Image (tube, rainbow over all chains, first blue to last red; front, top):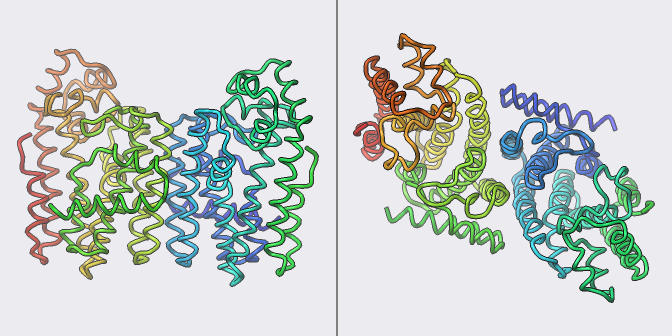
Length: 298
Length: 298
C-alpha cells in the first residue's frame, strides 16, 4: 500500500515539527508494524490529507504505547528488532513515548472535536488496560469478564476509536464502524493469545507458552481451567518455566477439552459480529481484513 | 486558598470518570505540591467552572510528568512522601502517569481549541526538556544556551502555557501573560538550582550539592566554570560524591567569583521582566507570587 508510506512521511513531518534531533533519530529506530489501524482508517475514510493525518496520529499513539509497554514488560525486542529500551535505556523509552503521545494530542487539537475526544478517550482506556493486564498477572485469574474488559481496553479500544474516527471523517455511521473496530480488536487479541500456544518459538520470535509463564491467563487457559479435571495441577504450572513433559500435558489438555478449538471459534464469532455490523456498507476490504485474520493456520 | 480544594475535587471527579478503582487509590497517594500553576491560572482568569477545570487539567499533567520524572531520576521520595514508584513500582508510575496525561488531554477536547493546543504543545516541550536534561548530564555542559533551552522546555513551558491559557479564558493579552509565565518559570528553576547549593540537606529533603553529583551543570556552575582559575579541578569534581574539603572549596569559589550572587541576580532580573510584561494589568497578586519567589534568604 503506497498510502502507508504517505502515513510514514506524515509521522516524520510531525516529529520534525518538534525540532529535536534526538527524537528524529529515535523515530528512525522504531520498527514498523503492519499498520493495521492505518489500513482500517484508509479503507473506511479513503485517502485525503485529513485521513493521512489521522493515521499518523493513531500510529504515533500506538508507537508511544508500545514504547511504554516494552519498559513495563521488560521486552528487549520488538518485531524482531531491538527495542528502544534495549538500544538506549528505559528512560529514553519513557521520554520518547511521552513526546510521541503529546505531539499526537497536539495534532488532534486541529481536528474535529469528536475525533479528538474519541481518540484521546481511547488512550485513557488503553492505559487503564495496561494496568489491568499487569494486575491480572498477580494471581491466577479465572474471570472471563475481567479478561474481556482488559483486552477491550488494552487492545480493542484504540482500534475501535480509529474505525469510529474514520467514519466521522467520512460521514458514515460512527456506531457501526466502532462496533466493527471493537470486535476486530477483541478477535485480534484472542488470536494473538492463541498463537502463543499453537506456534513454535521461532515463528513467534519469543518462547512459546510465554503468556502463562508471565502470569497471563488468556482465553484458552480460561476455557481449560473450567474444563480440566486436575485444576490443581494446572494451577501448579502457573508462572513456571515449563519442562517438556509439562508443556506436552498442557497441549494435550487443550486438545482433549476443546479449549483451543473453542477459543478459535470465539474469535471467529467476534469476527463475524464485526463483519455483520458493517454489512450495509458492502466494504469488501474490511471483510477481507477480518477474514484473513481469523481464517488461518493455528 | 479555598479555590485550591475546588481544584482537588475537580481532579478527583475527572479520575472518578475513568471508572478504575486503582486509579482513584493511586490519586489519593499522590503528594500535593504548592499548586503554583493553579494559583497563577486563578489569579489571571478568576474563579469559574472553566478555570477550575483548566487548573485540574494542568495539575494532572504536572502530576503525570512528575510520575515519569521519578522513574527517570530513580527518586523514591516526592515532597517528603514516598513516591508511587517507591510504594508500588516503576510500572505503576509509568501507567498511572499515562492515565493522568490522557485523561487531561481528553478533558482538553471540551475546551477552547487554542487552549487545548497551547497546553498540549507545552507537554511536548516538557517531554523534550526532560530528555535534554538527561542528555546534558552525560558530559560537563558549558553552554548557557543549552541550559536555558532545557529549563525553558522542562520547567517554564507548562507555566507559560498555564498563564497564556488563563489569559485566553479571561480575554486578556495572551502574549503578555505568556511572557510573565515563561520568565516566572525560568526564575523558578534557577532558584531551585541555587537552593541546591545554598541550603542544607535537612531543609532540601535530599543531599546538598546533589545536582553536580548527578551531572547537572546548573546556572551557578556555569558562571563558576567561566570564572574559576582552576577549571580542571572543578571538572574533576563533576559527578563525584564530594568530600567535606571539596564541598568547602566549591562554596568558597562560588563566593569569591560572585557566581552564586550573579545567579541570584539573573533570576531576579527574569522576575522583573515577568512583572514588567503585565504591568498594564496592575495585578498585585501576580507581582506578589513573583516577588515572594525571588526575594528570599538564599
